[in-house]
Length: 102
Length: 102
DNA sequence: ACAGATAGTTTCCTTTTGGAAACTACTTTC
DNA sequence: GAAAGTAGTTTCCAAAAGGAAACTATCTGT
Image (spheres, rainbow over the protein chains, first blue to last red):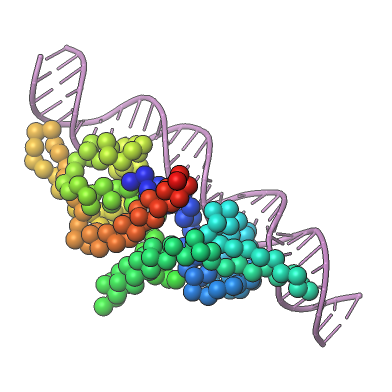
């Protein structure tokens, strides 16, 4: 069960799975793109969560030399290994929804 | 991504994955058995987390009519559907450990 | 009678998490 | 020159989460 602690130490918090899931499906997104996609998040939390994910090498952050400076966030190769986890959780959530509805 | 919110609303907190994982591998455990298996947890948190899991029908709780009264906790059929999630997270954690070690 | 095991609950406290709003700083468009 | 878009940071606060220790209550064995 120590493996679960290790994994969750990088994935805890209200927004990490959402952000990773969003970056897995749509690649290369700016800060404002993420604000629009991750429903309800504020600038402070998005900024902090992105920093956490970058520190753990789950995402890439590239500052582009454009006129209003833009930043490109994308899932890293390492981050892509989380896909099975994200998929399983999403599938389970969908099945759960159906069971309480239908 | 709403599916992820739905799933995580039942699985949030520091101990849920541990408790579920423990009950998936070893069936029928008492409160004190769980205290011994879930490393570091206190009685308050174990009690609270077990209640949450029971409310969401992920585990079963049966009070046995024994002399010091004993309680049997076990994973429910519904709880068993979490197995793929638990397995994926544990596998990822193990791979992560290996990558920072070796 | 007392220690030890069962299964918790309660209280008190600290830490962590998260959110709203204001602010910085730079550039382009109107 | 003002508005709007880029990408955040900072401050201030409230709520949630979590932990340690003490306590309840019952029963068994010595």
